[in-house]
Length: 408
Image 1 (cartoon, one colour):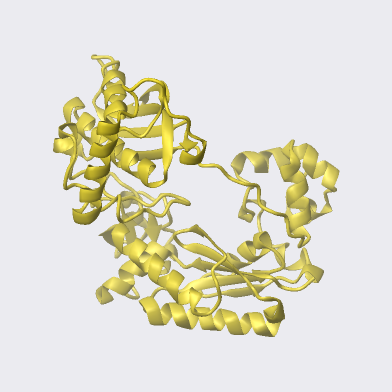
Image 2: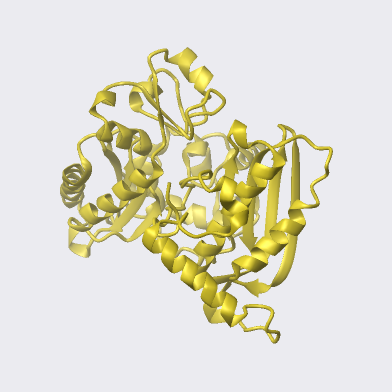
């Protein structure tokens, strides 16, 4: 079976971007944090910091203890998105990008006449050179090449940073034997426990399982899919459907009171509504989640006829917020989810004019146009006024922010 996919995984992307932006950080341990505060944690660490044991999720205090010379930098998400798009353009000059998995991962399908190991090495080298030319030498990548997407992705993580791993179907599972089960995409903490109950502890054990056994362990065709992909087979990905649009924000200490917290979640709701319209979907539910103090989480949901109207979302937000008990601790985190999505192609207009009223639809469209042109805080509903400077752009797994609908 020939090599078919090349998977590009950017090395410590956020930290590398910061080192590229600021020469004074190069060669130094760097921790990227959501805010410059002792109460937060690292969302990324440079390889110099990782050498001391600092990793994603390490608190600022612990990072300082592990690495006294570490320098903390507040995340510049807009810059990371800009770098991301420049990297995509650079890779496209070498080979067409098949799909983008996240802000720091993408893969390409090798053309039929480029599927030997020698060809793959040439392409990998060209990709590295193109990325360096586009964004700078600090932003490096590790590359995996294999007969399918799963194996090429696994390979990209085997020799970081700046690694190149080529996995041939005929040699499996040999090169993978030293990995942990958790290194495989789709095997999380709970699945690892389930595998252990079936006496599957190592990658070698996993390969020894029959298709029937993996189907039984997973309890679905995902077990069959994994069995085939581990052996280099290409399985068509299941079609995915967008299910929700969400935003969340950990409140700064000065915002930890009910009035300011409401203004922040008000802003998050308006951001989510604007994204929803850009995605050409309608939402049939709104859920709020509020962390009160450090222990109690308040969650409520409202359902309604699918809509894109900000005013309807904000009406239900006010009603749900009013249900928070008066004797609770102050909010420390707020989240909003617009769910039960329906695409515009599958949407049926309502019978009653109070839903999706043409005048309100035009108002939202006009506000969106102004905010896209001048920045997302240009025009907003007044309830978000005190929170307009809060909840800046954040990059979540598999979500690359749209600079038209989000900004810092």
